[in-house]
Length: 320
Image (tube, rainbow, N blue to C red):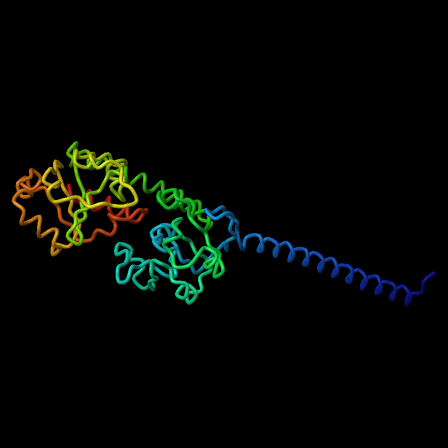
């Protein structure tokens, strides 16, 4: 039989032992939780995606993205690049509302400039020959994703790929849905204001005339999504290739569009030549006063959600 004192010490011993075992269990659980949390963080800290150069592992939440000439896509997904595309002083003006305070990076992507930016993700177009460095050069600086030819050429496909890379698939899908709704609304308005009248678009720069083919930049959306009538002079051009060839002033005398949108600075020598050409001034589109001049061509000559959205709004407004 235990005495009262012995029972008291035995009870204290058992109580301390239980506390010790409980603490050990708690530590084990905590370690297990920490281990699981660490594993989850490791798993979510980067993702592996297929690129035009094979599989590449990229950070899941990059903070400093360099994606020259693809800033439109980043903005559509709510991302801000660390630097924006430029050719000398020329930039994509239509994006300046979002990128006014962002430093520029030359379109050839100079290695020294890329190094100074210290990006944690680089996204390049498939035409790698346009860049100063090689793929290996950029991959040595930061994880580098190379877009396929399809992703480079089709902004909708590109948007979905960016959504995958940046973990914003839902945002990409919602953006595309919003775009489709905007196109449908524009079609309804144009059915009433424009009907089956044809429209041509032309960029005038450096004294030369670039008529938009059906698939050139935002003309693809205007003709093939909003179903605007294509004039004969544009149909004759066929599908536009990578090179955009100018059209002669003499050929423009055959302009048969009901409406013509001219993009370019009014002081450009090409526009001055048009205004001084008797042949041009006798075309029906001029005689009917259906020529519309717009100074900023940047959204019209780009492919992307933001460019398309701005072009739709401007196009619809012209014919109200």
